[in-house]
Length: 307
Image 1 (cartoon, rainbow, N blue to C red):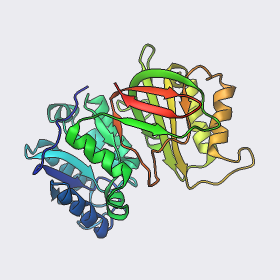
Image 2 (image 1 turned 30 degrees about the horizontal axis):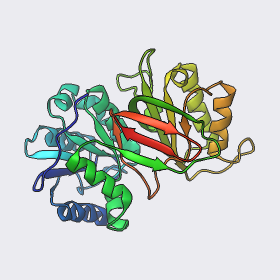
Image 3 (image 1 turned 120 degrees about the vertical axis):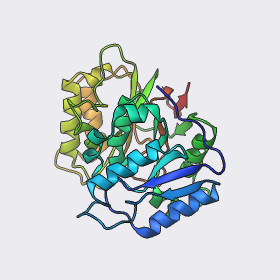
């Protein structure tokens, strides 16, 4: 796994809109924050161009923006303005060798998980992290933002703690961190970008999050992961934030369903951390895809650290 270089003051950060159209105020807010941190934002042509349906621009423009940012030696990182839907249209058009030969942080979450899958399969680490709206509306001393810019400037070290949860499974494990938006990654099953497929002998700490997915839909996805062998092979599981869903007649919460599913399939001998601060919430800690990490779940807290 190749880790992109640290950013220095004055470095150019390309802003791309690879999926759904984004509000101009958020692009401006994100650009202003990048300037405040000492970087030079460069808005790629499709960031605020004429929308193509719900997309920020045409597929061809969005592909060109990512590829041009990759190949431009002045650009040191690629900051995604928004997720939504659309990145899956791009990943087959961005050659893995271009990503590998031009290792740069790509930053974003939600639908950007498709690009994280491309980066990971290309052998380059990436940042599942807040985007332009977060930089615009959250206070300047926001902890998630602080973690993001510390990683960009100082390197991919994480040292996070989270509160205990009643469904947590105690334990300690080490492995390579990977994951992201569950529905997006589930949609890449059996493709060259299948980030959720864990082979025998791989040591993986998996993290998942999602928004607006019904409980039964998440249960279906996790059942697929069990049937494919992934849930039996991972060394640890981080259950992030599942937001904007409704209870159903079978489960009063997403966490209740996931806890019941793990018990049903006998996934009891690995550490599992519920309610971790990652996902579509204000406390959205940056996760370094591809980092070697240590996960420790105790009665007092959950600890996730880079090793």
